[in-house]
Amino acid sequence: MKNNLILFLIFISSVSLHAQTDNTEITVETVSRKWEFFDLINPKFSKEEYEETKEMLELTTIEFKEDMTFKFSFMVDLEGTWTLNKNVITTTDRRGKTTWTIYKISPKEITMSRNDAEQKIVFKVAK
Image (cartoon, rainbow, N blue to C red; front, side, top):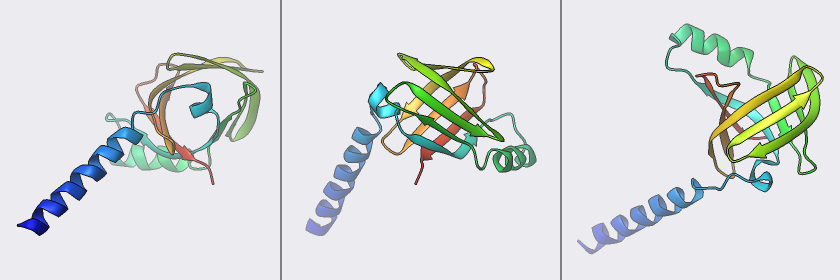
């Protein structure tokens, strides 16, 4: 019984610690890092569409710097500036403006959608 109580307490502590790390505030400091594509969320995709899109996005990276510049790499590199307003990042580059809505951020992962798309892209911190 004592061992079960100890295991239960360890479990609750780990769940509590995990929940705390998932409540990262969205700030310039927490967004400013290099992110690489990890996964995507699109409930409308078939398994084949999901796999094809995931493979296409495989080498995508986006780096937000604290000096408010960014670099987005997907087939070609786009560089420009960015702003943050609550949970919305607006990037400006030679092609115009793009908005990224942040749904979730942690020290190791960020989930965003681009230009109000239903599809969400999950990025992890680049190595």
